[in-house]
Amino acid sequence: MLKKVAVIGGGVAGLEAARQLAALGYQTTVYEKNDHAGGHTSEWDRLFPNRRPAVEVVDTLKSQLNGNPAIVLSTPITELLPNGDKFTLKTSNKSFEADAVLIATGFELFQAERKEEYGYGIYDNVITSAELEKMFTEHGTPLMRNGEKPKRVAFVHCVGSRDEKVNHLYCSKVCCVTAVKQAIEAKEAIPEAEIFCLYMDLRMFGPGYEELYKEAQQKGINFIRGRLSEASELDGGRLLIKTEDTLASRPLKMSVDMLVLMVGMTPAEGTSKLIYNLGLKPNADGFIGVSDYHLKPSETGIRGVYTAGACSGPNNITDSINSARSAVVEIHRYLSVKEP
Ligand SMILES: Cc1cc2nc3c(=O)[nH]c(=O)nc-3n(C[C@H](O)[C@H](O)[C@H](O)COP(=O)(O)OP(=O)(O)OC[C@H]3O[C@@H](n4cnc5c(N)ncnc54)[C@H](O)[C@@H]3O)c2cc1C
Ligand code: SF4
Image (cartoon, rainbow, N blue to C red; front, side):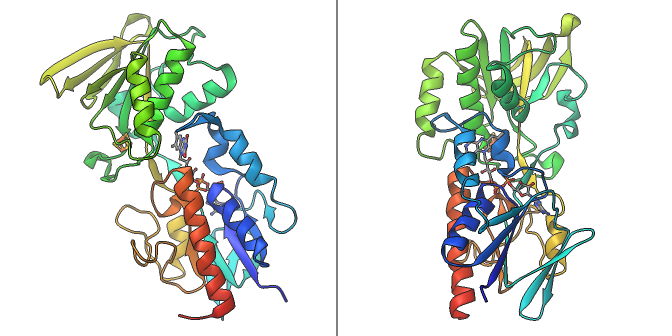
């Protein structure tokens, strides 16, 4: 009998792990709550650092779902229980059994309404970075609610991250480079537009990121160091934003046509409940805690249950794919060698 592995979540991490597990001979099933695979990556237009179409990455991973690994869509797993040396996964009306489980439930976007002072959901032309990705996919350009192209656009970094007020002290890691990428794309779509990035500090940690920042500077994107304090709407729908230029040490007021909020990553809904019955608790940031940050980044502390991707903390696609492969090694060791 083939050993069964259940992968919870069909984002890039879950799909890559499933492909590797099936190649090692395990009967692998991905359980995905949405009606499509690919997770958040399927919502992006072009990816940093090289602006490759996201659909290329998602389609490559999806093309490997061929029966083994299999994917079961529209199936949110709500409970995960130990069952002898196996595990039971439950939905509202079904249950599944597996010899080992990979949790790859990813993240949710920070709810921008929580930063009331920025006016998301109140003013027409305050949008999120995720909504701008959708605009790029559908129209190839930022568009205001009235269908016109904006002439001044400001990107606001760290929305819902590094913010004591919303109790998220962590950095979401991908939003600085996403802002720089989107600022370049906006400038390319509307060359006459003035584009501003309002940042606390720029965290361009990955390969190709610094080059993207240089490109943005060469293309005339304006970088202002300061945290937005509030936005308000002026007559005609323009937005007045107030910040402090912390490099020049002076308060700054400016008007823009569109404000793009770089929303951070928050723990996926339901994941803390999912791990609860195993006796596991989320870490201080609410993500899945791993056994040893340096030496056992795929282990949860429960033998037979592993984790990959952004459900253990903010990650880019490359890191999510790498963590999926590292989790597969641990699952293989557990199922084939059964050593501690
Ligand atoms: C605005 C934005 C732009 C980005 N752009 C880039 C980029 O250009 N390049 C890059 O490298 N990275 C980018 N990222 C980061 C990238 O999106 C993540 O690294 C990647 O999505 C993580 O993949 P994942 O599989 O871990 O999680 P996810 O993409 O979140 O996928 C998790 C999956 O699990 C499913 N799931 C959750 N709970 C359950 C459950 N209980 N039962 C069943 N299924 C469940 C979800 O429906 C989802 O399909 C961006 C992030 C943001 C916020
Ligand atoms: S990556 Fe940049 S924008 Fe995102 S939380 Fe970190 S510092 Fe802020």
